[in-house]
Image (cartoon, rainbow, N blue to C red):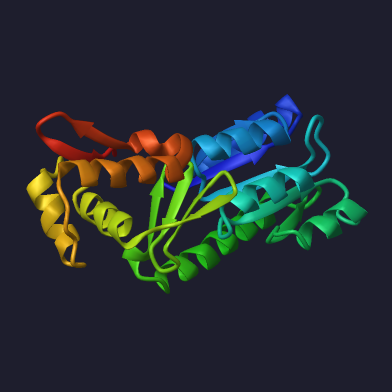
Length: 226
């Protein structure tokens, strides 16, 4: 089920459009302003973000910039009663995919959402599935050898990449040190249990608050939390 994060400062709008979108089969989370939207996206990434432009504390344009830093591909649509305002035009230049006039029919809203989700699916389908691993607020891009979390990027080493690929191959299962050694030795790895622990320590630091998704059990090994 595809999930939409919808941010609007009006309670009535949140209730109305949540009911509409859920009726179309989408999972929906709502946010009361831009700051709330950014925080909820960081907790769990949505498949599409729908932002009202004029909101207190942080408007939709600023929220778009923050969310785009965390995820360069997620579709972001502006939802506004004033499609000609300068802030909207500026926002479209900062990473938003489209805007939807609140005065238009709900059929057009749903069509724009479906179109944006199809475009994202086409991009995902064009990349090997193993290229990207999402871990909570963090994204691991194996093609770029990079870890991104909350807008910050860190280089991924070969040992860290092989370790993560192994754990992701059967997410939720503990892998023993022997299995981890075998995966790492494919790159000429020479080390011991302590060397693996150092790899994990560095990796968790790069994953930031998502580091806890790499779990270990003493005497058993490591796994990726589902």
